[in-house]
Amino acid sequence: MSDAPEGLRRTAPRADNQDPALFGQTPWQTVGPFFHYGLPWKGGADLVGASGIGARPDLFPAEHDVLHLAPPRGPVTGEVVALVGTVFDGEGKPVPDAMIEIWGANAAGRYHGEADTRTGIPLDPGFIGFGRAAVDARGGFRFLTLRPGRVPLAPGDDRRQAPHLAVGVFGRGLIKRLATRLYFADSEGNGDDPVLALVPEARRRTLLAPRIAEEPPTYRFDIVLCGDGETVFFDL
Amino acid sequence: MSDATPRPRGEPGQPPSLFPPYRSTVLRSPREPLVRIPPTLTELTGPAGTWDALMGPAIADLTRHGRGPGVALGQRIVVTGRVLDEDARPVPDTVVEIWQANAAGRYIHRGDQWNAPLDPNFTGTGRVVTDGGGRYRFTTIRPGAYPWGNHRNAWRPAHIHLSLLGPAFATRLVTQLYFPDDPLIEIDPIANAVPMPYRNRLVARFDIDVTEPNHALGYVFDLVLRGRDATPWEA
Image (cartoon, rainbow over all chains, first blue to last red; front, top):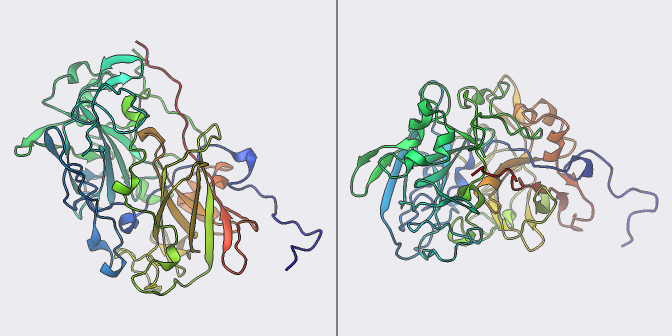
């Protein structure tokens, strides 16, 4: 078969994703309400064990359930904690179609991956530190993870941060991820944490999760997207 | 210590969180200014290279992804491109997750109850990891447009959702791919949250060289993740 006839253009010029004049950050768009059969895998909310929490297979037919079940990763080193909370909108109503991601250091204070070059601090072969959970029909989530160790502020800056987790919030009506942080209200180091110090004092409490139960130690971190008691969100 | 005054980052191509024409944003977007923080070790790191243990193994062909031996209905397409940083350097070994409606514009999700048929041979979700050149590639079917409840006679343009992590917590991106020459884009509140000309970054380009003879139409869509912010912490 011959190629296209001579004189026919093969691609029309137009302003789109491939226009060099438009090169730059890809804009964010919402996850919408229908992400549950694709994004949250089974076990995404259990960073330390082999349970299937974090997914919502009740939201689509079983014959289309192709979600991954995270395999057991072996024992972890450190203190297991539970993180629970509810996502609320600007009228105080639970948000049933949100998704939460967390990212945290291991118990020794080392992040998984090559970007944390502090090889003198041990990695934990059973722990990655990244979790993802779709909230339930009442806007609730529950993660099982390790209490993170303290980490330095930045490469070349050894001021220590208090134990914390980076938290991302997604959902219908959220065009962009909202980024926040969970700190442990009863932890050492909160008083001189350099990031908390940038937050207006009256709003810091929205980032400090109180301990509400034991076995495992359980911390409550409600997320208010808008209005009274609005959670502090960061421009990273 | 750095300037404690919260200030917006000011990337002109990014949409705001509050965009009232997309009604669901009104009660779900912060009213307080975001608190600007220079990147810490937390934001500069991420779960790179662990995708199989997290989301699971690759699903690159969505057209053969029902439970039976059948093939999905609809216009078969290839969607491919590169994941790059803001300096146009490839981002290798990073996960690209996608999900979409079927050819009739229907999601398998129980929350999607409009009167269009489900396809037993199409689930509509996939994931791949970029190669050394930052390239990814899916085979799928072109999704249909569908109505939604934002306002009277509102229709979403045909789109594919994409989710990327990139090398760090700070490089996270979730976006939507649109198709060229779709008249619904310019009247869609979600697409319109991105101002022109940046909205055009969300429109894939049909490419005859990516098109596979006698098999599938080809579309190219590159994804550009945030670069690393050079703003340092002040000791």
